[in-house]
Image 1 (cartoon, rainbow, N blue to C red):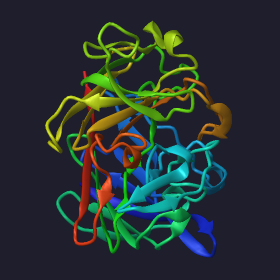
Image 2 (tube, helix red, strand yellow):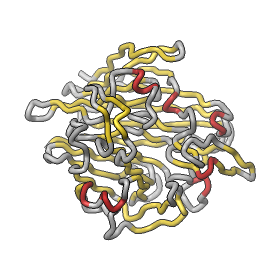
Image 3 (cartoon, one colour):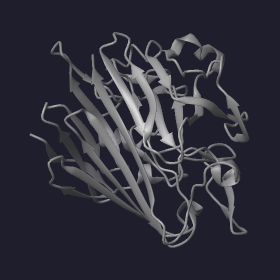
Length: 345
């Protein structure tokens, strides 16, 4: 039966951290902790009787407390980079923490990934894990008190459904994403270079040497970023040294819920499809992973061991008026939905 099982995962700052196992009728399950609203496991059985865990994760809270690579967490208040930690709203300039050289990354020194989220369970045919965080006015330099919710469900069709909602009392930028690292083989030592990736994107945002958008949009056609027809990651990763860390502009109209990406394991037995309401997707191939994060098998997670498919708005959008806006105003509700679905061949 569909169910959510709760158990104590650890304690942090005198707060209890829980592990929630979301089971579907097949017995496949996704595990989430309320520290950072983090996905720590996604375990599925294949037709040959084998079991795979397709996301990088650990069973130790301490691993996440020391993590600097955002494994599995919810990233906010703003995912990706903001140039020099500066932006203006209605003529007022705001200064954010700069934690990535001269720039602001993934919410700052203590983003949503480092927070303990409140939780509740909703018993439905497909049970819902609902997580909540209240981000105070001025946190990491952002304006406005921000109420943030995420709802996570796991269906019998092996769909991991992640929905975000937020409200504010002052205009503020918001850009939330999940930062799970995927490896469909379940073997971190095998890496992801022989996975086949397809992206529904004709363009990408050009960036400078600090990964900040120049404002220019470029076609992917014929270059190393052309994944429209699908290709092995190793085919052209050496042309993007040290690897892929690019925001792709998804082919879509507005916030329509639509196909974004497909990732297939080397055996062809397992496919991950991504659908989203977001206008962009950041492909990150774990270029800076250095084995400091130890997975549940005690293996160090190294470069190209896993990849991220981060559905998002574009980096540095507050400083580029022609990018889709990320400014949430008082009286409005921010919403975002992404579905990661596993298909068995």
